[in-house]
Image (cartoon, rainbow, N blue to C red; front, side, top):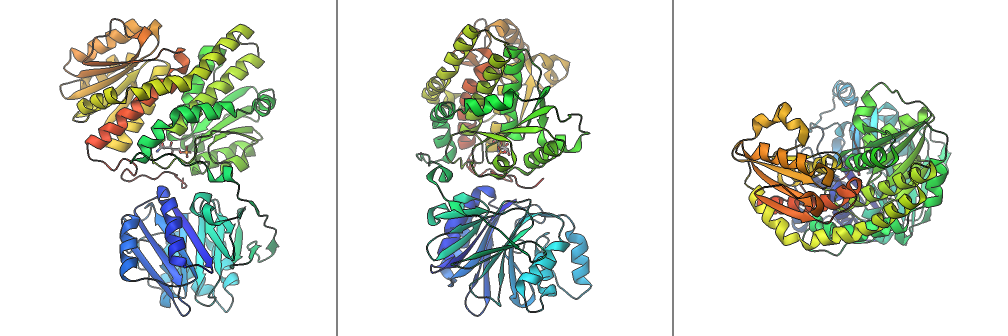
Length: 598
Ligand code: M6R
């Protein structure tokens, strides 16, 4: 999973490519590189490590040209080294290729190439593509690309340069996103709109199995038989570009501070009529799909549907769903949650659900994403661009809008009275303000982080909706601070995990439901009397009787809504633990913002 960008036009290709890569670094930052057509040759510069390394190399050895491709990598095959960085060239640099995705049959292709005398120089699955195109080249680049692509299995988006065509870019899409952008006498290729948005008046989203030949003035699209395909450009609207977040030195911190606004704007733009049409549709069961934090937001929905509407919902981690025998029939409504709308597991799961004839409602933050285009209906979260790898404002907005869907469902099917519906909606509209209150307690949460930062291990614990919040807290803490962290239902402790509660271990309890306060107090005691330390995030009405090393009081809300509020406290704790532990908060090791490989 990586980001690719391509440029052809009147401008300086290196500058445009680097600018594009800056916006795409969230898709991977193990290495970066560019290839430029200098008029005579294809010249490559690539470096392991952050984009800054590539910039330094280019400052020493500038690359000049009007046409080029660039890549930022999240390593899947082969370590993060200069040799494994993209672009890859064929022998004598006749073709240069950047790739996002995975070529699953690359070993067979590598054997095929080696048998014909080709020397491979990297450990990646991507390098074979450049050699294959070269092998098939007999005077026409487009034909060679089409033939090579037919041999590839897996998912891919490609950017390709041919030494034989100075001002031409080629792009290919199969199951990995690729966009063509048109500016003034210049054209772009890019994995997503953020990389090229500021230069483009119009954009076109490629369909699968499409090859494009792009010049500064014109783009032609073909299928793999070289038959022309229509390609429709549309205006690159401001909404598409997404609002930018005020920057407070770290994207994660800035984005946490945007939680209240994200919730407010998402709920204000809720498309009640469109969701109503889907909810009134013909289905017996609701199933949720998502990965990581998006899946955790789905758990908030599941809990609320059970507690408020009395309806069971199936939750599916998308990658697991793909390997399980599918028991859902066409009478299942799938709700697919994804910030980026490009997560490969989620997209594959949605394709599988649609193949069975199910309807799909998407919750997404990117209007033109693959998910939005696949789904029957999309509810947008209005968070603006989220750049930090850790999902924060997107999770909060997803959870809030899923609660809104739950209330609409309960109302439509008479699961709650009109009066209850009014009260719930009123409380929902207060959530943004309540998260604001949590953010005002930032200093106290930083203090908590100071004690957690030196823990040997952390357990995030809660019951019911609090367990949903605990799961998200645990993910956030481990991914940005590398502190070992696990989430558990508090009541499960005594069935095994209590064995780990010793000195040096911390437990972060969530207690937001007054009906469960006594049970939670007992769990805290169980942990403390075994030598572990307890920190509690408790709603005012659910804090009674709890004795812990530290307790932070959170605003009260309906228990099923509480993860929206309490997870903001956890996000701030995770952020400060990471800062104290000296981690690169916005770009944690081994991760990337958007996971576009299965
Ligand atoms: O773009 P998506 O919402 O589909 O991404 C899903 C997960 O990859 C994402 O939430 C991931 O778990 C975050 N890094 C969590 O902070």
